[in-house]
Length: 444
Image (cartoon, rainbow, N blue to C red):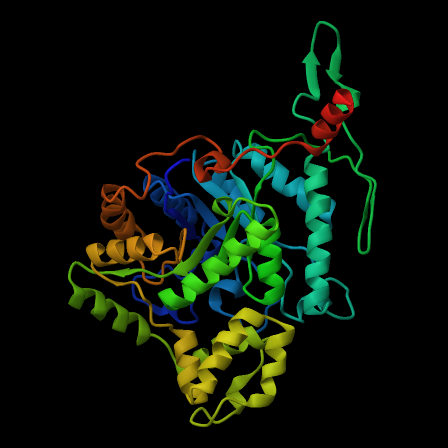
């Protein structure tokens, strides 16, 4: 068995994940729509041998949305552009099953996979904001459990479309004039609870067979879906014991579905803030936290509760308990973490500030950050981390000063293992379902 290796991704997040990050004196205020900015970050991340770049997304905004989400590139567009200026790093984009036709999504990700030489990944989401429905001519947003039922059928359809072409379907024999072996191009002819899709897809398989499946969600429905289908899972845990419990739960569920638990990577978010000394790192943390306002912290809090407007309540009072139901309808994992803070007796304002500018576990010197990453990894709390940059320049500090320490510890690569995202993540190329059926028939 190959030695277990730390996985590291980086989130291309423009002006930053917070509501006030863009106010930093060194921040580029148009970063979320600047290809030059993303190109620079992508090439730094690839220099650090990181596994993948990730672009998050949402299909609903309002005036309370964070600056990055207000004005940003569509994921597949920017990732296709980044593919042309990188060579080995993975390219992972978010796309919702609730509001995109599966044929279109399958075609777009297959195209990215070909453009990049097999480096594409799809972060499967169901969209939690109710405002999304109106942008797509829908009268209502699907309930949480229904969205996950849709997601299961949708993922099967998309994978089926990706398998439309067997790997050797394209003959391309100039002498005979045969371009295609028609017996190796397959219609899907799917008719299910939610979807009807005929196929075949009008683009062949890529070098990695299918894009890698990522998933973000820690609710009961999200965990079940991730354990059954995902090859990497984005999550959020604030302490090691919480991370270990989530890790053990997902790995156990994956085993129950007949999967190798080691083929499912668990990568929570991390926002390293690095300084040459501990005091310098703490000063940088204070610099970031002082950019935030209570008004924007309340906006950030509302995100997990269907963009609820918390500014109408007394910030020195308790969390309004009647709002909890909005979290159960939208982002269950994030809202549950927030409600746990309310149970501790924190005021609404205190909760909002902890959400708007969360205190990072990863504030310190390069040595401290590397040691903590190693500890969480060796303690089976994570398989890696999904990195945010909250302060300008932190990605370069991480690549130049933390990555060499992780390499010296023997837990992170010194060079890419292959040319595709699957190769670099240690994942097998999926067997084409139609090829498998044909082989089974031939053997019968």
